[in-house]
Image 1 (tube, rainbow, N blue to C red):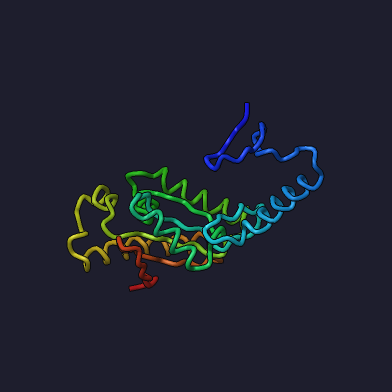
Image 2 (cartoon, rainbow, N blue to C red; image 1 turned 135 degrees about the horizontal axis):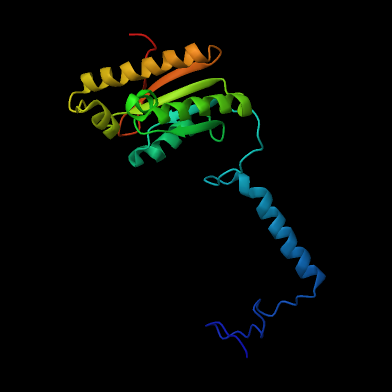
Length: 194
C-alpha cells in the first residue's frame, strides 16, 4: 500500500515517509535531535522541573483547600522563589483547621507533618496562609465575617497568631510567616502580635 500526502508526492510504503530505518546517518540525525530536545526541555518556559531527591527545602506551607486559590497559591510561592522548595499541607481553614477542637485529628496531622518535614527536609520556617471569604471559617465559627473586611482580617489574624505562637512554642528554631490571601491572589502579611 502506498501512502500519499495531498501534494501527490510518493512517501513510500513506510510510516516514516520512506526513510530507511537501517541508515546510520538517519539514526544519528534522529538521536541528535532527540538528545538536543531533552537537554533544552528544562530551559523552556512553562516546563515543570522534575522533583529533586530528598534534601533541604525552605519551608512548609499550610494553606486552605479552597479550589479557587490553588493556582494563586502556586504562583505566589513561585514568585517568592520557592518552586519545588516547600512542603505543602492543606486543611480547610488553614490556621483554623489546625486549631479547631471540632476536628482534633486535623491538628494532630498538621503537627505530624511539621515534625516529618523537619526530619526529612530540614525546613527552616512554617508559612501559614489563610484566605478571605473562607467557607471553613463560616462552618467552624458559625458566623460569616467575610462581609466586613475589618472583622474578617481580625478573625484570621487571631487564628494565625494563635497557630504561629503554638509553632514557636513547639519548634522554637523555626521561623513563622503569617499570610492572608485575597480572592484576587494578592497576599498581605499578618504581624505575629497585634
